Structure formats: structure tokens, C-alpha cells
Length: 202
Image (cartoon, helix red, strand yellow):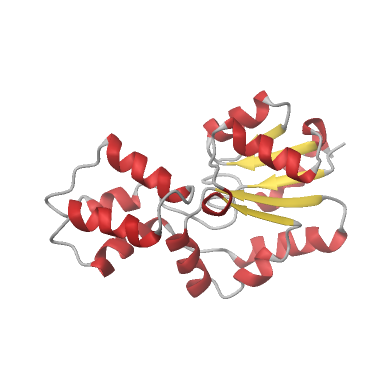
């Protein structure tokens, strides 16, 4: 029996365009995406560097870009948050049948954009028993340690837990720990159909 549901954020609740940031950065002639940039991005996502340090890295890499252009490019991944998904999680929270946890690879610039542009973000956040952002906890998916952290912090049993994420690498790690998974396809599936699509678990 499922007692805990862990949700991803991007492409589960808020729609995202994953290639958008790279596409926007590529408009600057000097841009080259290397393993160093990947490492910087992941370091920022786990709180290893501050927002100012992150922006300064890209200022050096892209001297022709303004700070505003860099931030806009970085946030280009973020799209809309359909209201019916808020209604879904609020209804689920009101029923108090499950412990609800959000687990997201999210950084400060993205959350700042969401707070500014998604009016109901506070209501969304308050629907969860626990709300984990990678930059705040120092772990990121798909690494095993982030799932172990969540399990231990919340004293939950993997076999009684469902994890929902659109990225297969993330759900693969969760599955290896004995957690039930739904690797949702954001182009054809909606989180609001959870209890239909994963009916065998409930």
C-alpha cells in the first residue's frame, strides 16, 4: 500500500522546455558548452556556488551578454503551470491519505522566476508535507544519495512509496532502491491522471 508520494516539479507540475536554455545560450557566438559548464550548472543546482558566482562564470564565458540576457536565457526552460495541477495537489493534500513530498533539481534563479511569475506558488508549496529543492539540500537527482536522504529524513519505507518523475535516469535510481515509480511522459500523460495510470498501486 502506498503511503508516500514523491513528486518531481518540472514537467510534472510546471511545464518546461528542456532544450531552451542551451538554445538561448547558443545565440551568443562565443558560447561553447563543455563538461566544465555542465559541472558548473550541477554545482549551482546543489548550492555549491552562489547565484552571483554562477552568473559571473557565464559573464566571463559570454562577455558580449548582459546579466539580464544571461538570466533570461537560463530561465527560458520555464513555461506555464496549468491551474488544474494545483487543484489536483490541493485536493490530494486535503484528503490527508498520503504523505506528499516534492523533490526537485531546482536552483535559486529558477525558483525566483517561479515566485515572480506563478501567483499560486505559495499555495502549491503548502500542499506538500515536505518540499525539497536540490540547491537547498545539497543533493541532486539522479544520484542515489538524494533518495536515501529523503527516505531517512521522512522515515518512509521504499515499498510504500511512489516516485513520479519525467526523467528515466531519476526513476531508475529510485527503482533500484525499491521505490515504486512512474516515469511519466509529459507530452502524453498528466499528473492529474495518477490514480488511473497507476491504479494497481492504490
